[in-house]
Image (cartoon, rainbow over all chains, first blue to last red; front, side, top):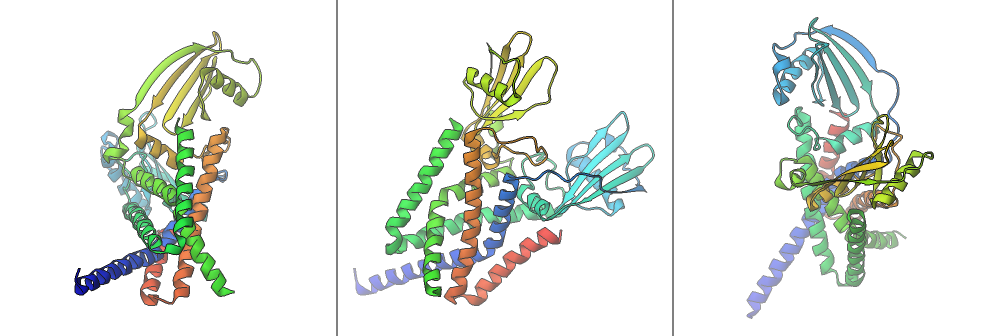
Amino acid sequence: MLPGETNNKRTLARSVTACMRDVHLLGGLFLGPLAIVFALSAILLNHPSPAPDGAGAKRSEAVRVPAGIERLEGMERVRAARQILDQLGLSGEIGFVGLNGRARTLTIPVTRPGWEFTVRVDLERGQATVETRRRGLADRLHWLHKLPGPHLANIRGNWILTRLWRWFADATVYLLLAISATGVYLWALARAERKAGLALAGAGAVTLIGMVYALAH
Amino acid sequence: MLSWIDRWNRKLHTYAGLYLLLFVWLFAVSGLLLNHSAWPAAQFWRERRQERFQRRVELAAAGAPLERARDVMRQLGIDGEIEWLAPRPGRFEFRVTRPGRVANIDVDLTNGVAIVERTTVNAWGVLNMLHSFTGVRGGRPEALRDWWLTMVWSGAVDAVSAGVIFLALSGIWIWFRSGQRRAAGLAALAAGVVACAAFLFGA
């Protein structure tokens, strides 16, 4: 190999390393607060406290019920329910729209970080009762960790901020994978940490595989 | 003193990252699948295997429900985390869950016959269940961890979460102490903080 070619290879290697370092550093700094949100909320979900008792503040208002809402299903019903929420000045992720055909009422639970609203609509009288509960920081973290989630996936993400948060949650995962891959690359360059690093990576893999095997078999 | 802290902080950042690597990947990928249930890998429930069998069991007439359930499980050769179902007269019912498997056990108190409906899912289903397998439910304070492996896995969840928090904070320290890429680093960190604060408090 000619000296020029060796220099080119070294320059390329340095560029790749610098790029990896930047991805790891800058990606890690951006991801840090998001990762802390998910990690903290995971600990809180792992050790839940009892839900606070007591009813929330209530108010009643007349509303215009979209025609035929009882006959709608899925996202169409959610969109119709959204029209009722707009009249009440409420926004948030609609959990579901429950219809009690006999009583001719709708129940619409709505959540946003730190807030829970339960809207009950009397379809005959066109009257909505809104129960509002204020929740604390832990509940805000729970909301971010669990939404959008897998339940009622056909109507999930019916609030724009939930859809935006889904994007951030996905970005957290992809960045995490990129940061861990670049981290491994940077570690592999540092000869001093090779043995200890390999031992720990191996120990972590053995621990996880052992646990998963015991749990699943 | 600070150089000693810097050196050990960098070592621990590397070591923690390597030890937790596969744990973090597991929770990251399973979290992604939970948010995208339309993806093919998240469709594991369609490919579930279900079986049903019945067996006579000896059910203790008295005793704590947990002990009676564990006794029935031992006789049926089933292990896992117990979840209590709504009680029905003349039946002793509960569900046993472990990553990849769910068994509904229904003991007829009149004749001591246990009907077991067992559902098994594939590896994607195991991954899915591992993400949220904690043995507790937020809205049900009576649900407590009763299987030792659930406690081990729950401890692992805590450890991985604490490890991730450490990695984030130690990483910020490393950047701060290095003095490199100050402007870009500050911009990246600020963007992350603003994004979190906006959703936590601004939504």
